[in-house]
Image 1 (cartoon, rainbow, N blue to C red):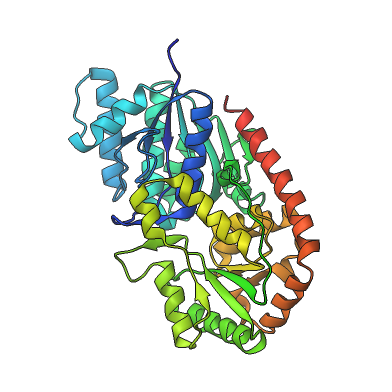
Image 2: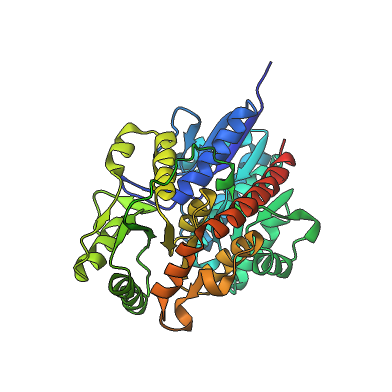
Length: 402
């Protein structure tokens, strides 16, 4: 019996050899695993460094501007209606793989905003190709930002109207932005995060004499102010929780760069003369090319700690999936948008668990952390109930894709 074919477009940030973005990889891998269980033949465009034994890879491109986009789109129409192939050689494999598939699935992410306009244009191009060849299109787990550029707004609006179902990670801002683009509300569903599809084995936290705090922090473009405030936060923890042990859990890792999450966190701890920290050896995981091992290792690290502090959206999701309380450091309104719905659906108090850097310094932070750790069992029970509810919502969304 002939297998159905799926083309998955992953949302994975550019990474040099030797690095990865865990959250992006996790969403893509979750979709690969789901379609594999449905016995699909899988094609993908992702820049992923893993999973090569699961799917057939096509080139992922970043479209540099509107002219580039319209040229590629015109070549697609010429190919369709005259059978003349003017497409650039680098894109032909991606094009041929897509038009020979039965579905296009755009994996979860936060790139539908004008900051990442090249990703918006690539997704719009792939949607238009699929629509032209009568291929159903599905989008899962998206954060949709405000788009003020009229040309980009028109391109995205025209493209998204051709999609069967659009899954969004937050119920308010993304929904309103889609409605402002003219998207029919009946196409829009809540899809908390593709990562919730992942399966992993939990490990028990071995209580010792240390308070174990996981850190998942990343360098922000407005570096000076955010870094200063995070340094103050770490100093407060050092001064008021003397038996603290930090677990560094980077979501962007690159062994050949000095600007990844791990180096960023180590640099700040060194500045404060904090030596009580540990972190997993990601290099071995990359060499093994095994995302299954990587997932298990990361979730084990989250399970080992009493609490997590994260500026990373998927640092928050990962910790909560293991039942560990996590305090969000929201770097700007975009992170508030992504994180609010997740916390709200689980039922965790935003005033306690979310800290917005744009609102000021992180005052009395250590006292907040101690309060959460003392009451961890209460929060963990609430988290587990909330995560199970979100997993059900995620599975209900994917039932529409079968």
